[in-house]
Image 1 (cartoon, rainbow, N blue to C red):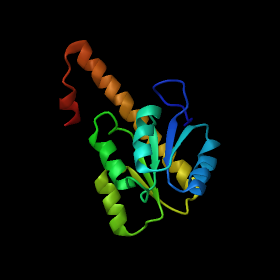
Image 2 (tube, one colour):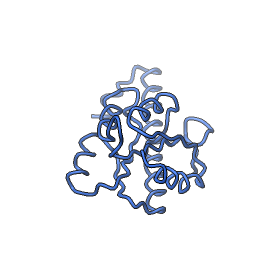
Image 3 (tube, helix red, strand yellow):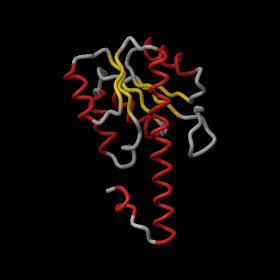
Image 4 (cartoon, rainbow, N blue to C red):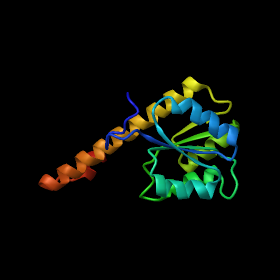
Length: 158
């Protein structure tokens, strides 16, 4: 799969949110070669602002950040109808089962432990972007069907 987003010919957009500059630079180096458009955020509040301005297709989110934790950012994004479909990959040094459970409860779509393996990172990013693409295509198709003949999209999803 290419790094293109299905909704247009632009490259998929990734937002990397981590308060540690070396971590941001490493993720950018690993993912930059894949042709993605990348933006950065250094804390939780900046992450929420960047989501509004940059409209990413995927957020790579550290848990331990100033101003708002990754858990709080994830929960806010998943509670907002405008941003709830953006996949969130938690990338963190925390690896206890309780941390993973809390990330899942906050709504994250996948979890990756630091130090990050490049192949695992790129594979998970591609997979989450593919799921996003398929979800967007399904939503467009259901909207089209509803528009064309009053089709009840809810009955298909139940």
